[in-house]
Length: 348
Image (tube, rainbow, N blue to C red; front, side, top):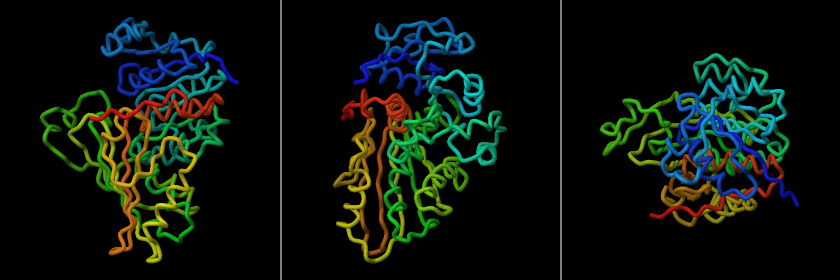
């Protein structure tokens, strides 16, 4: 049995993802948070930034420039898009396992990244080593990886909702899927903007990134691997006036021979050994998964329109970010995959 105590570094302490990583890792039985970095808050305590950790995680924040990775086993990069790639490049020969929570290595090539993120990619060699970190689809390769690209929160909810159908071999139209997704405000990150200002979010609801959101290509690429052909779907995100959570409703036309019983069986079989996907008998809400690493999925067959309607709910900061990253860490270290991730959803 593997009883090693692994040393963990978190690069990027000020955001919601860094905070959630700490919340999960402090209760993980085989990890120790050895270092946490912040450029803008160097010298402060972690609990100065996140008061809920007072008396729990009070260690001093250091600059990433001062971080000695030699004593670390795993490094989480909780950094903005376009920043992580420089740190991956810096530590590429260190032997440390890296889990990047930005979008810098999620896509198939640097050219695709530059097209959708509108940024130059400064470490294209990293794409050769990076593994897309969705355990439900890529557990075998994640176990062998030294660099894992943690999925986006919208793609996590969206891909999990449609993966069984795209894997089924039913002859579906790979261009026929429509995903209508809504996220809580923490999905926009901790930095304030006009979009995330309280007066613009509270008592309001709107769509954004219509027809052009960069998570579209991430969803398309992962589903294309399952159906083994190019996918060109419709994805529209919306901003909810809530703290956290994602609810995605996906639509896909199927042959008239489908039934509710067949659809349920397909989803139950596809996710039968996946500890964090729960197939529900009724449509889930975001509070059903709040604070947890669960993805709740409800497949519904609409015989009137011959469409599958799939509802999926996740916590964007846990299953959509930090929790999934810890799940990936467990696989990379050869640990039991659900270790440290048994948080029960908070309700209400």
